[in-house]
Length: 222
Image 1 (tube, one colour):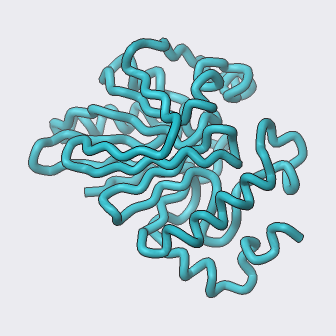
Image 2 (cartoon, rainbow, N blue to C red; image 1 turned 135 degrees about the horizontal axis):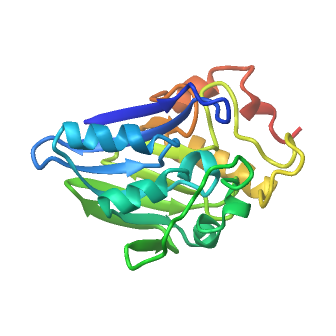
């Protein structure tokens, strides 16, 4: 089962998504990003008698990691993130939580897993392939689950592409050419999966992007 939490009411974010993968037999669960919705996620976990074993982070920006500290303290999951994003995860100045006035007190402990290369693990009955590609951030990581879902962070959306240096001045640590290559990677390799982006409408197909002549993917390098 896939449960989506979408933060629509916070003026600091734009329809940001978190995804909870639930094994309905074992009552174990895995979270992809936080969407600044730690309280709602914890409440759902308790109300449904679930155990959150792991959290996978697509990238370190505040709207995807704020309230991760709350989840860590309350539920003690393992936390997975691309190696190149790991240091930024603990720095409120660089991850943006300080800029928006959100208290963020994440503690680095043995439950952190730094993803250094493409890898595959099976957790709670879910097969998760991690692909640390970079682009939007140095350690942006894609996650493919059970050959069904692809979690792509702030790279590709149904009707747009993610922020990068070319279209947003001051987009810190974004490598535009790597970002464009990451979009090509999704289009070339994820056509069989339902795409779960970091914002906006979820569960779309790459074919919907390709068939839309107005999608900025087609002109991103112009």
